[in-house]
Length: 163
DNA sequence: AATGACAGTCCCA
DNA sequence: TGGGACTGTCATT
Figure 1 (cartoon, chains in turn brown, green, yellow):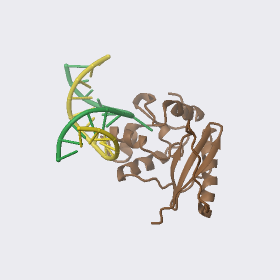
Figure 2 (cartoon, rainbow, N blue to C red):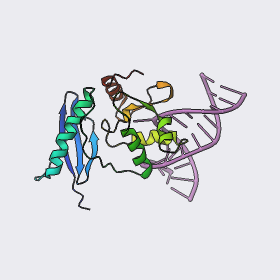
Figure 3 (tube, chains in turn blue, orange, red):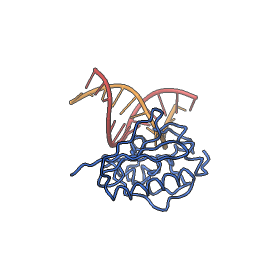
Figure 4 (cartoon, rainbow, N blue to C red):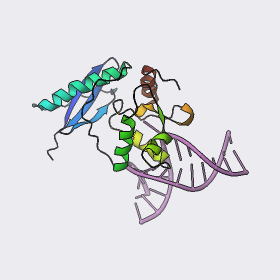
């Protein structure tokens, strides 16, 4: 495996996100940092990555504006088999809808691994596009969020979700 | 190799 | 309202 990695910035009204790519697709998306570091751009950015990045930027801005993105880049997050299955289940949730941690656990065939689903959500390397923010605790309580509760509330508000 | 902590949930008192 | 069991992953010991 070639193991190229490209990190490209995305400017939004909420700050500068950083998108991480390998030759397989998007592997990570960082929330804006308080201490902003410069994005690392190699001399030669593969043509495919440029194309993916346009799609990523468009999709990110769409969701922040509360609109379902027309298209997503190839998503290739690294993780355990359990985490991959959780993230796949998250992607099936459309904008403006929510699930509970328990519902995700059931959907992947591990109904008792509710706690672990929370862990997998927290480990999600591609927040927003892989909608970990659409997972609420039982009874529509807000639950937690790795990127900070402010972001979870911000994203849910954009999608018109009330908790 | 074992333990503790965690973005949860159900059960039973 | 509160404590215990259950579960996958990671940091720490």
